[in-house]
Each structure stands twice: as C-alpha cells, then as structure tokens.
Image (cartoon, rainbow, N blue to C red; front, top):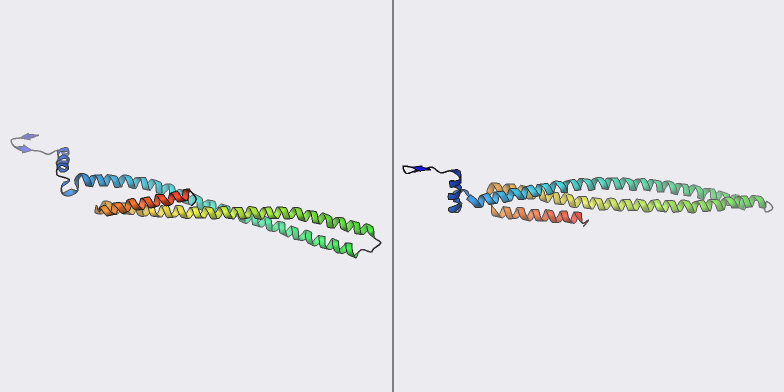
Length: 201
C-alpha cells in the first residue's frame, strides 16, 4: 500500500477514516444510516400504499354493485306493489258486482264473493313478496353505504401514505432529522387509518 512515504487510500480505508472521525463533512455513517432507513421505510410504505389503493378501488366497485342491486330490488318491489294495486282494483269491482247483484241471485253473489276471497288471498301473498323485496333493497343500500365508508377510509389512508413518501423524499434531499420524524408520524397515521378501514370503523 505504501512505498517511500507515499500512501494510497482504498475505498474501504476511506470509509473507515470517516467513521473514526464521526462522519466527516459528508454526514458519514450517520447520513448513510439515515438514507438506508428512509429508503427501506419508503419501500415498505409504498408497498402498503399500493395494497390500500387496491382495497379502496375494490370497495368503491362493491359499493356501486350493491347500489345497483338495491335499485333492481326496488324496481321489483314497485312492480309487486303495482300488481297488488291491480288486484285491489279487481277486488273492489268484484265486491261492487256482488253488492249490486239482485237479492234472489245467490249464485252470482257466491261467484263474486269467491273472486273477492281469491283476490284477498293473492293480495296477501303479493304483499309478503313486495315487503321482502323492499327489505332486500334496504339491505343492499346499507351494504353499499358501508362499502363507501370503507372506501373513504382506504382513500384517506392512501393519501396520508403518499404524503409520507413525499416527506421521505424531502428528508433525503435536505438531511433534516425533523422531516424524518414527520415522515414516520405520517406513516403511522396512514397505517392507523388503514387499520380503521380494515376494521370497518
């Protein structure tokens, strides 16, 4: 390595010298450690952010699908109520025909009464079906609202994690310790909001 008092520094010797001097003018080991720490943290946060972004898109798609299912059930329920109304009209006409029949025409009265009874029974069955469809529509609406709430949580979490990554970039450029702390804080907040999304909170 040396000859006639001349000493050549290798890359390893250079790093050891800086480490012994506490990092020298370029930040040395501390700066390198900070860069590695931020780089690793950024990679992890970016990966988690990508997963959260996917979850946000999935919940938004589910919310739209569930809202569409609710609309279909509401339409089916409306059709059933229209059918119910048609049966009510027929029942009213049968009752009117029964009441207007001559007193001595018992056969006609019995015929119209049978129709009234049949329409009453059909109306009861239609009402049960319509009520069931309305309940299903309400349930799909509720599920859609839950998915939208969860979507907003995922979106909030993804946004905070993006801010965290931006802070990491600025911290790397400026070597400011307080920005590194802000980066960690933003990452923690983003992860906490993501946990709330996962828990439907």
